[in-house]
Amino acid sequence: MRELGFVKSVVALEGAEALDPVVKRVRSIVNTVVRPRAVRDVLHGVPVGHVVHPALVLVPIGSWIGSAILDVVPGSEKASRVLVGAGVATVLPSVVTGLTDWSGLHERQQRVGLVHAAANAAATGLYAVSFIQRSRGKHGSGRMFGLAGLAFVGLSGYLGGHLAYRQGAGVSPADTRAAGGPAETPLPGAAEQ
Image (cartoon, rainbow, N blue to C red):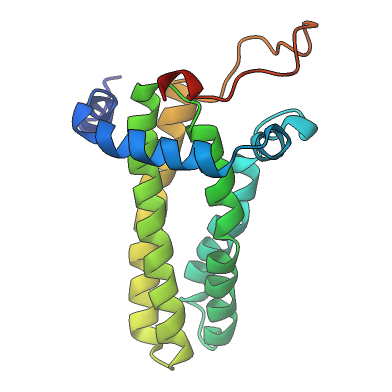
């Protein structure tokens, strides 16, 4: 079976050198802010044995999907609003762990990751507006902003899948600690700075 046409556009992101100035700036900020080795290790998931970002995104995404389901159930406006708010409130740990992981990726992966992050930011912004509208009693527009946010969540999820499964981002063929190698490694991206 042949790949769908839009896959070529996603693959083209890998070589989109126009994104490099933003990639370098964001990577520099992340590597400056998330500096202590112990903090980086926790954010990378070293204590639990693998990255934690995929697990943390379950809370906002699950909340937002649940909200979309409740939006078609009469009388569940309050519950739907609570789920939208819970999703927005729980985004920050996902962002921090995702950016920390992203900062150590190859530049081709970072380009896709930057667009992944932008889609997540758009989704979060749309859901924040959705929450505000719902809190004002404007449930119709709140649902519309939520659906638009969910579309960006879907795009972001696709890009995250591309990063993990097509590009192998965050996948190590051999864990150096398990092989008796050093636990301390240089900060990701440090050589490029």
